[in-house]
Length: 256
Ligand SMILES: C[S@@+](CC[C@H](N)C(=O)[O-])C[C@H]1O[C@@H](n2cnc3c(N)ncnc32)[C@H](O)[C@@H]1O
Image (cartoon, rainbow, N blue to C red; front, side, top):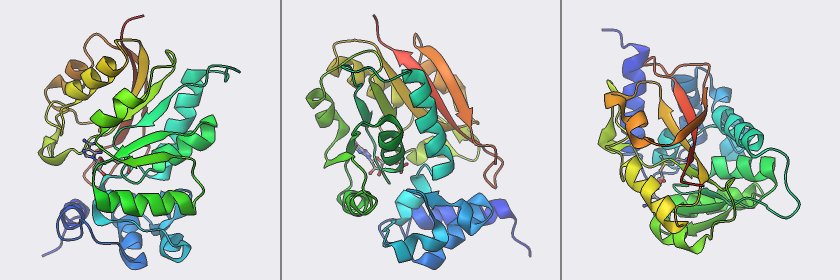
Protein backbone atom coordinates (compact mmCIF):
# COMPACT_ATOMS: atom_id res chain seq x y z
CA UNK A 1 0.00 0.00 0.00
CA UNK A 2 1.46 3.44 -0.92
CA UNK A 3 1.38 6.27 1.57
CA UNK A 4 0.35 9.71 0.32
CA UNK A 5 2.45 12.87 1.05
CA UNK A 6 -0.44 14.06 3.21
CA UNK A 7 -0.31 10.90 5.35
CA UNK A 8 3.49 11.13 5.68
CA UNK A 9 3.12 14.78 6.74
CA UNK A 10 0.45 14.05 9.37
CA UNK A 11 2.48 11.11 10.69
CA UNK A 12 5.56 13.36 11.03
CA UNK A 13 3.57 16.07 12.82
CA UNK A 14 2.19 13.48 15.26
CA UNK A 15 5.73 12.19 15.91
CA UNK A 16 7.11 15.72 16.49
CA UNK A 17 4.29 16.71 18.81
CA UNK A 18 4.21 13.28 20.52
CA UNK A 19 7.27 11.07 21.18
CA UNK A 20 9.79 13.66 19.90
CA UNK A 21 8.12 16.61 21.61
CA UNK A 22 11.00 17.36 23.94
CA UNK A 23 13.76 15.61 21.99
CA UNK A 24 16.58 17.63 20.44
CA UNK A 25 16.39 16.66 16.76
CA UNK A 26 19.34 15.30 14.82
CA UNK A 27 20.55 16.74 11.51
CA UNK A 28 18.88 13.86 9.67
CA UNK A 29 15.55 14.51 11.42
CA UNK A 30 15.73 18.23 10.64
CA UNK A 31 16.38 17.40 6.97
CA UNK A 32 13.44 14.98 7.00
CA UNK A 33 11.21 17.85 8.16
CA UNK A 34 12.52 19.97 5.30
CA UNK A 35 11.80 17.22 2.82
CA UNK A 36 8.34 16.28 4.08
CA UNK A 37 6.94 19.65 5.15
CA UNK A 38 8.68 22.11 2.81
CA UNK A 39 9.56 19.93 -0.21
CA UNK A 40 13.38 19.94 0.19
CA UNK A 41 15.76 19.83 3.21
CA UNK A 42 17.23 23.30 2.57
CA UNK A 43 13.77 24.91 2.41
CA UNK A 44 13.36 24.40 6.17
CA UNK A 45 15.42 27.20 7.59
CA UNK A 46 15.48 28.89 11.00
CA UNK A 47 17.60 31.87 12.14
CA UNK A 48 18.90 32.05 8.55
CA UNK A 49 20.34 28.51 8.77
CA UNK A 50 19.01 25.76 6.49
CA UNK A 51 18.21 22.32 7.95
CA UNK A 52 21.30 20.56 6.51
CA UNK A 53 23.54 23.01 8.43
CA UNK A 54 21.52 23.40 11.66
CA UNK A 55 23.12 20.62 13.71
CA UNK A 56 26.67 21.50 12.62
CA UNK A 57 25.98 25.16 13.51
CA UNK A 58 25.10 23.99 17.02
CA UNK A 59 21.40 24.85 16.89
CA UNK A 60 19.08 22.90 19.20
CA UNK A 61 15.56 22.35 17.89
CA UNK A 62 13.04 20.26 19.85
CA UNK A 63 10.36 18.23 18.10
CA UNK A 64 7.48 20.43 19.25
CA UNK A 65 9.29 23.60 18.19
CA UNK A 66 10.04 22.20 14.72
CA UNK A 67 6.34 21.44 14.30
CA UNK A 68 5.10 24.75 15.71
CA UNK A 69 7.69 27.20 14.40
CA UNK A 70 7.48 29.95 11.86
CA UNK A 71 10.33 29.15 9.44
CA UNK A 72 12.48 31.82 7.77
CA UNK A 73 10.41 32.15 4.62
CA UNK A 74 7.46 33.47 6.66
CA UNK A 75 9.45 35.04 9.51
CA UNK A 76 11.35 37.36 7.14
CA UNK A 77 8.10 38.33 5.38
CA UNK A 78 6.53 39.09 8.78
CA UNK A 79 9.49 41.29 9.72
CA UNK A 80 9.26 43.17 6.38
CA UNK A 81 5.51 43.68 6.83
CA UNK A 82 5.86 45.01 10.38
CA UNK A 83 8.63 47.36 9.20
CA UNK A 84 6.29 48.60 6.48
CA UNK A 85 3.38 49.07 8.90
CA UNK A 86 5.64 50.96 11.33
CA UNK A 87 6.94 53.32 8.66
CA UNK A 88 10.21 55.23 9.07
CA UNK A 89 11.75 54.85 12.53
CA UNK A 90 11.15 57.86 14.77
CA UNK A 91 14.09 59.28 16.67
CA UNK A 92 12.39 59.25 20.06
CA UNK A 93 9.55 56.73 19.80
CA UNK A 94 10.87 53.24 19.30
CA UNK A 95 7.86 50.96 19.42
CA UNK A 96 7.57 48.07 21.82
CA UNK A 97 7.75 44.69 20.05
CA UNK A 98 6.78 41.53 21.93
CA UNK A 99 6.47 37.88 20.95
CA UNK A 100 4.10 36.44 23.54
CA UNK A 101 4.52 32.75 22.63
CA UNK A 102 8.18 32.59 21.68
CA UNK A 103 8.78 28.93 20.67
CA UNK A 104 11.85 28.96 18.41
CA UNK A 105 12.20 32.74 18.74
CA UNK A 106 12.74 32.90 15.00
CA UNK A 107 10.20 35.70 14.59
CA UNK A 108 11.81 37.71 17.37
CA UNK A 109 15.24 37.31 15.76
CA UNK A 110 14.05 38.55 12.35
CA UNK A 111 11.87 41.31 13.81
CA UNK A 112 14.71 42.52 16.01
CA UNK A 113 17.16 42.60 13.11
CA UNK A 114 14.75 44.23 10.68
CA UNK A 115 13.42 46.87 13.08
CA UNK A 116 16.62 47.45 15.03
CA UNK A 117 14.88 46.97 18.39
CA UNK A 118 15.27 44.31 21.07
CA UNK A 119 12.14 42.13 21.04
CA UNK A 120 10.60 41.05 24.38
CA UNK A 121 9.57 37.39 24.41
CA UNK A 122 7.78 34.99 26.76
CA UNK A 123 8.12 31.21 26.74
CA UNK A 124 6.46 28.96 29.32
CA UNK A 125 8.01 25.55 28.54
CA UNK A 126 11.39 25.31 30.34
CA UNK A 127 12.84 22.92 27.75
CA UNK A 128 11.84 25.14 24.82
CA UNK A 129 13.12 28.16 26.75
CA UNK A 130 16.50 26.50 27.31
CA UNK A 131 16.95 25.44 23.67
CA UNK A 132 15.75 28.80 22.32
CA UNK A 133 17.94 30.82 24.72
CA UNK A 134 20.91 28.80 23.48
CA UNK A 135 19.98 29.33 19.80
CA UNK A 136 19.31 33.05 20.12
CA UNK A 137 22.61 33.59 21.94
CA UNK A 138 24.43 31.53 19.29
CA UNK A 139 22.89 33.65 16.52
CA UNK A 140 23.54 36.94 18.33
CA UNK A 141 19.84 37.88 18.61
CA UNK A 142 18.97 40.81 20.86
CA UNK A 143 15.74 39.12 22.05
CA UNK A 144 14.92 39.57 25.73
CA UNK A 145 13.54 36.10 26.33
CA UNK A 146 12.06 35.17 29.70
CA UNK A 147 10.81 31.88 31.09
CA UNK A 148 7.42 33.31 31.99
CA UNK A 149 3.70 33.18 31.24
CA UNK A 150 2.85 35.93 28.72
CA UNK A 151 0.22 37.18 31.21
CA UNK A 152 3.01 38.00 33.67
CA UNK A 153 5.19 39.64 31.02
CA UNK A 154 2.48 41.95 29.62
CA UNK A 155 2.04 44.24 32.67
CA UNK A 156 5.82 44.73 32.78
CA UNK A 157 5.83 46.21 29.25
CA UNK A 158 4.36 49.72 29.46
CA UNK A 159 2.64 51.01 26.31
CA UNK A 160 4.79 53.35 24.22
CA UNK A 161 2.57 54.19 21.26
CA UNK A 162 0.18 52.97 18.58
CA UNK A 163 2.94 51.15 16.68
CA UNK A 164 3.60 48.80 19.62
CA UNK A 165 3.39 45.31 18.15
CA UNK A 166 2.47 41.98 19.74
CA UNK A 167 3.00 38.68 17.94
CA UNK A 168 0.39 36.19 19.07
CA UNK A 169 0.94 32.54 18.27
CA UNK A 170 -0.53 30.31 20.98
CA UNK A 171 -0.33 26.50 20.74
CA UNK A 172 -3.12 25.21 18.51
CA UNK A 173 -3.54 21.80 20.19
CA UNK A 174 -7.00 20.38 19.49
CA UNK A 175 -8.01 23.64 17.73
CA UNK A 176 -6.33 22.33 14.57
CA UNK A 177 -7.69 19.38 12.58
CA UNK A 178 -7.64 18.39 8.91
CA UNK A 179 -10.82 20.50 8.61
CA UNK A 180 -9.10 23.69 9.71
CA UNK A 181 -8.17 25.95 12.61
CA UNK A 182 -10.53 27.29 15.26
CA UNK A 183 -9.01 30.44 16.82
CA UNK A 184 -11.60 30.33 19.58
CA UNK A 185 -10.23 26.93 20.65
CA UNK A 186 -6.49 27.66 20.90
CA UNK A 187 -4.83 27.58 24.29
CA UNK A 188 -5.65 30.20 25.46
CA UNK A 189 -8.36 31.29 22.98
CA UNK A 190 -7.27 34.25 20.84
CA UNK A 191 -9.97 36.68 22.14
CA UNK A 192 -8.68 36.10 25.68
CA UNK A 193 -5.11 36.95 24.61
CA UNK A 194 -6.27 40.16 22.88
CA UNK A 195 -8.19 41.16 26.02
CA UNK A 196 -5.04 40.52 28.11
CA UNK A 197 -3.00 42.75 25.79
CA UNK A 198 -5.50 45.60 25.91
CA UNK A 199 -5.92 45.32 29.68
CA UNK A 200 -2.13 45.62 30.12
CA UNK A 201 -2.11 48.87 28.09
CA UNK A 202 -5.35 50.39 29.38
CA UNK A 203 -7.03 49.93 26.00
CA UNK A 204 -4.49 52.02 24.09
CA UNK A 205 -4.26 51.06 20.40
CA UNK A 206 -1.55 48.75 19.11
CA UNK A 207 -0.76 46.26 16.34
CA UNK A 208 -1.19 42.49 16.57
CA UNK A 209 0.23 39.84 14.23
CA UNK A 210 -1.16 36.32 14.23
CA UNK A 211 -0.30 33.12 12.34
CA UNK A 212 -3.02 30.89 10.92
CA UNK A 213 -3.58 28.56 8.03
CA UNK A 214 -6.01 29.51 5.28
CA UNK A 215 -8.61 27.00 6.49
CA UNK A 216 -10.27 28.87 9.32
CA UNK A 217 -13.24 27.27 11.04
CA UNK A 218 -16.43 28.95 12.25
CA UNK A 219 -15.35 32.38 10.94
CA UNK A 220 -13.21 32.39 14.08
CA UNK A 221 -10.59 34.89 12.81
CA UNK A 222 -13.26 37.52 12.19
CA UNK A 223 -14.94 36.63 15.46
CA UNK A 224 -11.69 36.91 17.43
CA UNK A 225 -10.85 40.29 15.83
CA UNK A 226 -14.38 41.72 15.82
CA UNK A 227 -14.09 45.50 16.07
CA UNK A 228 -10.40 45.45 15.09
CA UNK A 229 -8.97 47.01 11.93
CA UNK A 230 -7.60 44.50 9.43
CA UNK A 231 -4.33 45.88 8.04
CA UNK A 232 -2.62 43.15 6.03
CA UNK A 233 -2.59 39.42 5.32
CA UNK A 234 0.44 37.64 3.88
CA UNK A 235 0.63 33.99 2.84
CA UNK A 236 3.26 31.39 2.04
CA UNK A 237 3.34 30.70 -1.68
CA UNK A 238 3.88 27.01 -1.13
CA UNK A 239 1.14 24.96 0.55
CA UNK A 240 1.81 22.23 3.13
CA UNK A 241 1.37 18.63 1.88
CA UNK A 242 -2.26 18.65 3.05
CA UNK A 243 -3.03 21.66 0.83
CA UNK A 244 -3.26 24.19 3.69
CA UNK A 245 -1.28 27.41 3.32
CA UNK A 246 0.30 29.34 6.17
CA UNK A 247 -0.92 32.91 6.60
CA UNK A 248 -0.03 35.82 8.85
CA UNK A 249 -2.57 38.54 9.60
CA UNK A 250 -2.02 42.02 11.03
CA UNK A 251 -4.66 44.02 12.86
CA UNK A 252 -4.94 47.27 14.72
CA UNK A 253 -6.75 46.82 18.05
CA UNK A 254 -7.80 49.18 20.83
CA UNK A 255 -9.27 52.65 20.89
CA UNK A 256 -7.44 55.85 20.11
C1 LIG B 1 2.95 27.80 18.43
S1 LIG B 1 4.37 27.90 19.43
C2 LIG B 1 5.07 29.42 18.95
C3 LIG B 1 5.84 29.30 17.70
C4 LIG B 1 6.78 30.45 17.46
N1 LIG B 1 6.10 31.62 16.97
C5 LIG B 1 7.89 30.03 16.51
O1 LIG B 1 8.05 30.63 15.44
O2 LIG B 1 8.60 29.09 16.85
C6 LIG B 1 3.72 28.28 21.01
C7 LIG B 1 4.78 28.40 22.12
O3 LIG B 1 4.17 29.11 23.20
C8 LIG B 1 4.55 28.53 24.44
N2 LIG B 1 3.48 28.86 25.42
C9 LIG B 1 2.30 28.21 25.64
N3 LIG B 1 1.56 28.85 26.56
C10 LIG B 1 2.28 29.95 26.91
C11 LIG B 1 2.05 31.03 27.82
N4 LIG B 1 0.92 31.08 28.56
N5 LIG B 1 2.97 32.01 27.92
C12 LIG B 1 4.12 31.96 27.20
N6 LIG B 1 4.42 30.95 26.33
C13 LIG B 1 3.51 29.96 26.19
C14 LIG B 1 4.67 27.04 24.12
O4 LIG B 1 5.51 26.41 25.06
C15 LIG B 1 5.23 27.06 22.70
O5 LIG B 1 6.63 26.99 22.69
